Amino acid sequence: MPLHDEEEHHQLLADRLLDSNEEESAYDYSDKVHIIGVDEEHDDDDFTKTPPFSWKKLWAFTGPGFLMSIAFLDPGNLEGDLQAGAIAGYSLLWLLFWATAMGLLVQLLAARLGVATSRHLAELCRDEYPKWARLLLWVMTELALIGADIQEVIGSAIAIKILSRGFLPLWSGVVITALDCFVFLFLENYGVRKLEALFAVLIAVMAVSFAWIFGETKPNGVELLVGVVVPKLSSKTIKQAVGIVGCVIMPHNVFLHSALVQSRDIDNRKIGRVREALNYYSIESTIALAISFMINLFVTTVFAKSFYGSEIANSIGLENAGQYLQDKYGGGSFPILYIWAIGLLAAGQSSTITGTYAGQFIMGGFLHMRLKKWQRALITRSCAIVPTLIVALAFDTSEKSLDVLNEWLNVLQCVQIPFALIPLLCLVSREEIMGVFKIGSTMKVISWLVAVLVMLINGYLLMDSLSSAVSGMLFTSVVVAFTGAYIAFIVYLISRGVTFPNWFVKNKSSSSIDN
Image (cartoon, rainbow, N blue to C red; front, side):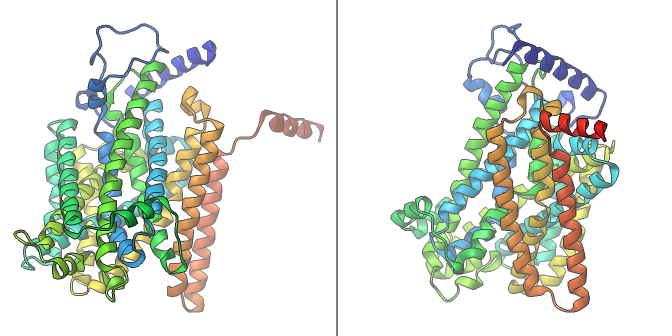
């Protein structure tokens, strides 16, 4: 890297840090985990030097990646896993692996944006786009968050219903789950590390629960390995394949991770410190998603071993999955039904809390609202709990209706994915925003290929769902109009991020002068 570029970026970082101090940041200074001085005898004056690797520092940076990984383990993902296993067997495990890898790439870009700019994605979108566009982006992101939250809260409510042996109906489980907002607020007052410890416990509960069921059912190890390594896809499993990819990248999670990485206090004026933070976040995010992949793998293979090729394979969902396992395997001293419910409850509770967390950053960033944390948390929670209560009351008596609802909620989130991916990729590619930390040409091509692939896959899911639901001239016209507006907005967002070569700009300017 040329010295003058480093000096310019050093000044850019210093100016940006000064500007960020004048605004409300994602974390107050007193709430941050302080990194400077950890495992170091002295602070080097060379602002370009990256400090050597330290296990103690890696531990200090560990946390944001695990909170981010919860979105890969929410009840919506678990339902996608069990349905993929029951209907497709072991054949889609390779896709689960590569979908997780694509999700990791996107999340690392979100972390890169947050660390390099000291601001999160919602804040940058507020500055980047005109008022109408950023408000539309905010609405789309909130819709995705509400859709995800309904799945998460319903998942928790189903687990509570199972553990109470049906005594507590679905709606009461929703109310109980809504109270986790207060747990979140309580723990947040005691520091970021306490909150991260709670999530570590919940992830451990999921891992133990689903590993226990994996051990009880004893899936075929050879078929598992072949499923991970050898790509297979048939016309009968396309829907499950699309569901696996669609569940992995959650729009609100991209916004969340770009804010979570700011919970560590690093010296953003030094390129070496920024690079160091990116290295540690890359390591801990990779570890976190490796663990989430293993948990998803447990769930998929359990249902592949148990129900693939059976008559009930197409009728399995979150609410009856535990009972089907119980009927097939019993449970010995501890019924497998309750082990399933405990894992599902941990997944639902952890994902609803991260949803509340993400909602605070999204609302505060897009709208620049200067509210207290508890006020933003309550507003965010209310936006999701009210529709979830309505859903719980309407669908409590029908397992099939819940499964249909879950499919449409997946479609809702798929529709919103471009409104997180496109702004992210446009911003991390711009030198005036990222400085020397903008992504290179190779990474840009790979990232856009992944984004286009994900959007095409989710577009297929959307069209497949609409084709079976749309009927009548009026309804068809409305859908076509909204689809046109949707595509036009995506094209607008992409055009905002397009940069032309210098020779093209010069030629265009010359031709304008000549004319």
